[in-house]
View (tube, rainbow, N blue to C red):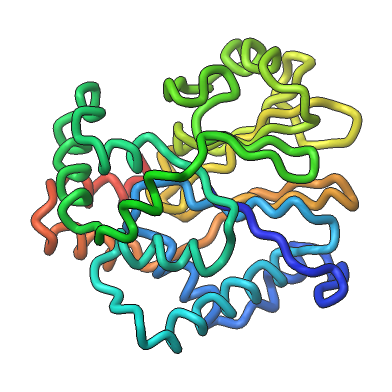
Length: 269
């Protein structure tokens, strides 16, 4: 999971996210769709800045893309390394996920299904030494501007618990004091409120928000999922966007990974 910040002097509050999304440059959005994949984690652009809209976040990503393209010292090969290079260029605010951890320590795959175990073993072989060392030092939690970010759950973030229901969320509300905690892990976008109901994001309440997944959505919607929070208006938007899912599935098969990993992308499961 990654968060992005920018200089408010350079990026004043632009138009609303839904309006900005209509005006995205096609090559920027295509680049986001095609490159934020392959590393089995939640690459969610949760932006804790009131003046930073979806348009600006894409602009920051484009700058990161240009930095990657212009760097002759980097040789980008398979997707795990590409994605790490991409995220490192975009932001210092990155969290460790369970599949990231397992790719570095294969003993952590004990409770993985067979397909996930094969993927972790493949990723372990593909990662460069430098990228493996970078992932190794990533934190389990991060606090930015009074917001908490965790891959799995605020309760025992290194134990990889799931938050799948209102009951799960109510239990976890006791383990963070911030107004909002952002999570991933289940690959299913959801907004939980501390009053016991699932509702739209609004000021004056405490929320636990799952931003979904770019790499592998599991809510029967194959489109990538990411989240944008505007703390100026105190609003949250879950963004869904299409990408070349057939090409992504083809790359998985070509790499010799289990066919089921490719098929599930097409179904969003």
